[in-house]
Amino acid sequence: MYEYRCRQCNLVFEELVSSASLNTPPCPKCKGDQTEKILSSFSGIVSGGSGGAQPMQGHGGCGGSGFS
Ligand SMILES: [Zn+2]
Image 1 (tube, rainbow, N blue to C red):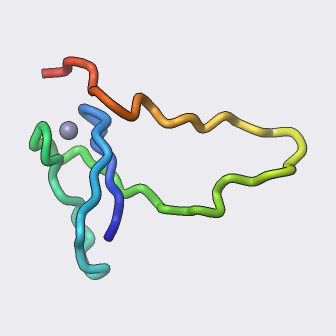
Image 2: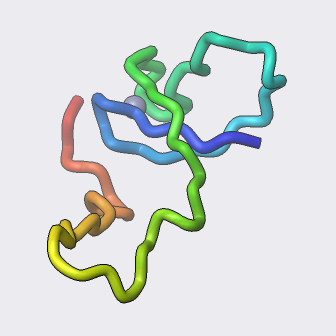
């Protein structure tokens, strides 16, 4: 199970693909193929780090901007 994000509508979706698959699945929403795999790094949030903390807030979780 991998997470992917669509660059066109910013939809984040999960796709069950084999690790051997190099191709990213198309976006289920806009059918675009401009998707990229999201590395599910749960350890990405560094707590207690000093300086260089860049706010990685999710880009609009719900509701894509009416990009048709
Ligand atoms: Zn999309």
